[in-house]
Length: 110
Image (cartoon, rainbow, N blue to C red; front, side, top):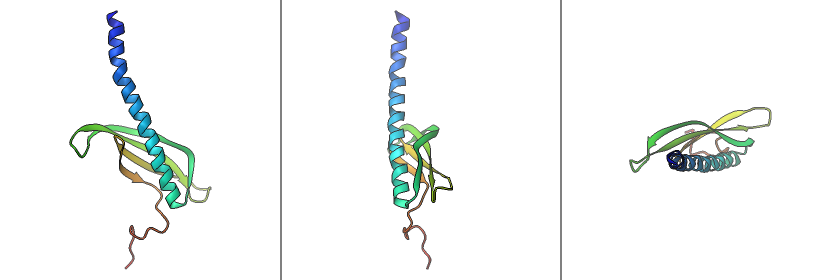
């Protein structure tokens, strides 16, 4: 009886961790898709894979899970590049990937 109770108590945090991870993966997927659409490149494999996780403090000072996801894109279908989405909880804290074609605010030639 005690074993079942302990297992049930341990199952709740595990289920919450898994659920928050799935939610973060879906959010990372959307950010990767949007980045590819804005840059006019092809989003490959229709997926984002978690490649890292660590505990970090958010802007309020609370501890949270920072998850790093990888997605791939192509400019012409013959090449393959990797992009990364970094989420702290469900908040976007980093995006490395395709740049919009006509974004002159990033690089200014004066």
